[in-house]
Image 1 (spheres, rainbow, N blue to C red):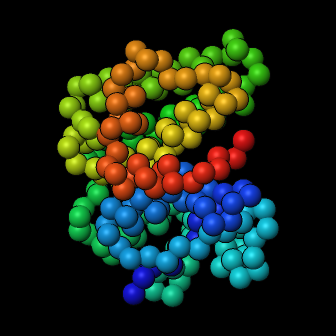
Image 2: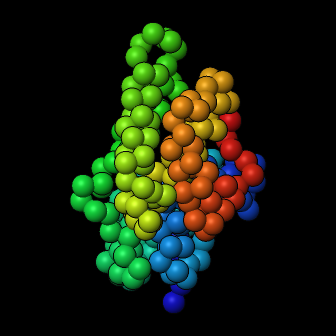
Image 3: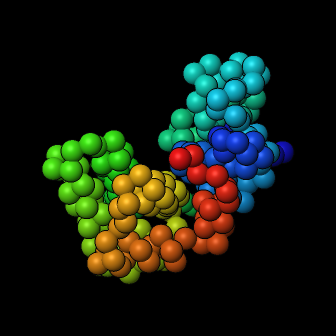
Length: 204
């Protein structure tokens, strides 16, 4: 039986996956596990009543497990791992939090109006740490040759970072961070790459 999952639809394009890295993380996990699923694309600006009944806070993603709808991508991917253990996507403990500060650092920099408030430098430091890790651990993934859950969380966020900062701040990841560029370009399997890039509308 296919798993049911509700994810964000693109603004103005209700039949296309939207720019929610948390929805993409859940979908990527199902893809990597080869779990059959039925996808419901939700218009966040005009949520259907049936969706509000299963997700009162109106948040995506939500996934139906054993007749119960579950929210929060952290919880969702943990349940998927438990219910579908093969192939394992478990993170090596030492890498589980790698890159976890990149997304909040990106959000702070994106919202910043003061070029001297340190938010750009904070983001650069996080990206440099990721670059150094990839340089010293061989890649192409965080844990080496095998994709793990940390990749499925980080890859969509890095894509959003690149698109949003280039559009709003004319800012790009420095070319000196070659391993970060390689990770975002080549480090994703075809299934990851296609899913992350599968929507045509990035909400700007």
